Image (cartoon, rainbow, N blue to C red; front, top):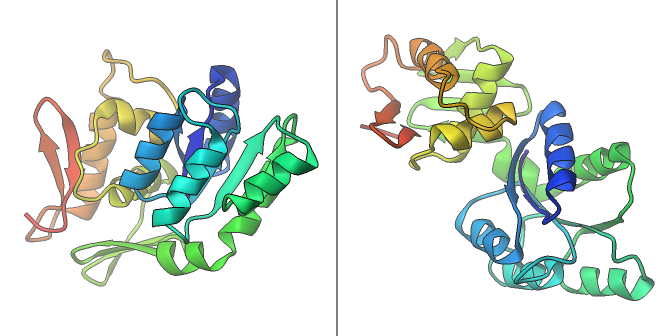
Length: 225
């Protein structure tokens, strides 16, 4: 799943992001409520995980704003606010689930899995497509022009991230954080190497390349040139 995590405690955010990456999810982190709301409204996510107490805008306020414009995206409140009234307020604001801190990570994974089974993820995220390239997220298969493409785990994760953000320029730092869960080291060409691996499999032999370099900025996967 493509997940937005809004959590202001850096160590907690890094712990959750690392665990979700290991479980096969893409995670983007916002460390304050205003940034979290902006990302939630401007980008497409399969799940929002919201802390309750945040700088600038709290989790329930984010939930209210998102629900006015996006009724289908699942929202999980993950917060230290643990009274019955807190939970009622969270659900009344539009949250689909509510998990209190401290929590067991296995329980978080189970709740995420349960949310993924609800209609939105199955209907909206079963496939990603750009031109004649199709990725099926449940069967973990990729085809272009009807021809199946075999990818490694990291190649698949990189392609999925570019497809999720189709027609948007993604920086090397954004790619590194989303796919590898690490800060970008300017001294390494890891991202460029894997992009070239993908190009050799996804673009080579086809008339129209889909993966493009934007000099000085990063990479973009376009529907068509």
